Amino acid sequence: MADDCLKMEHTTPQEFQWSWGKNIHDNKPKSYSGSWSDFCQFLDEHRTARKGLDYFSSVFGGDKRRSDANALPRLWMPFDVDCAMTDYQAKELVGLFSLFKCLFYETASSKPGARRLRFVAQLSRPVSDFEAKRIGEVFEGFWQVGKFDSSVCTAAQPIYLPPTDAKILRFSGRVIDPDFLFGFLRFKKAKLEKTIAYKNTETPDAYEFFSQNGLIKCSTGSALKVRCPWVDEHSTSNEDGTAYFEPSVENNFVGGFICHHHHCDGRTIKDVFELMKRGGKWD
Image (cartoon, rainbow, N blue to C red; front, side, top):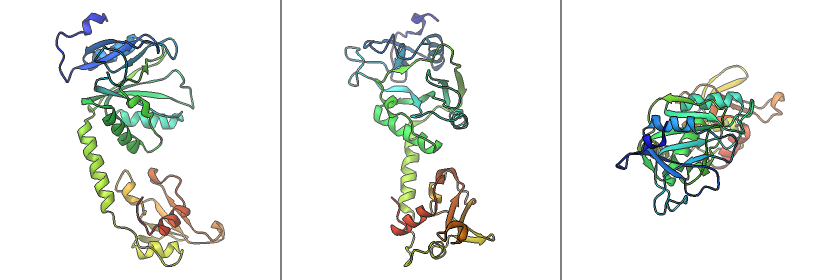
């Protein structure tokens, strides 16, 4: 694909734009514009032999040098996970992003069992660095496994191009609408603020806590099926999969708590006790 075929005579606020730098020291990258397909094709045809060479980033105004002051809002956004993922976690994350119009590839440091993926998604309008960071926070909430690298939310940040041997996959889902996501954040915040504070109990008795707050659903032998105290943080409204175990020899007479919802992974009876100490109030 000839570089000249990507240039447009007129620039509009909604034009898809990006820059290409030859290496990490290239502070005056070349600007391009075109369609989402042009952008995807460009990444496919401008691969890098090793990490630290070619990169892409936002386009730059002013004197055209790569800097935060010169960086212009982007109509696209990269997502990098801030740690290596298991194969299963990587598959889960690919499933999430497959719902959106984006591409992904494994970075140069990725390997089986310790995957490192990069996603680049199209947005419905250009966003600032601050807005990009908020979008990343929303997707962290959707995934609920790890954090995304916040540095790629900065438009001036160099994003390394795909390695020579990387497979680039493209999804044709929905374009990400920043305003819809920000509305979702406001709704979630308002919902948590309206959540009633659970009553505290006079004694450190978890059974009384669940009972007094109407959280016990039924008994299942050695356990009580309960409504999770953190149900409003679950990604779905399903209230099944949570149980409280009364003190016994098996749990050293401490009691037990388990919730199979992904957001509550790792929570134990100790977290219930901490909630009771705070009077059930949300952080």
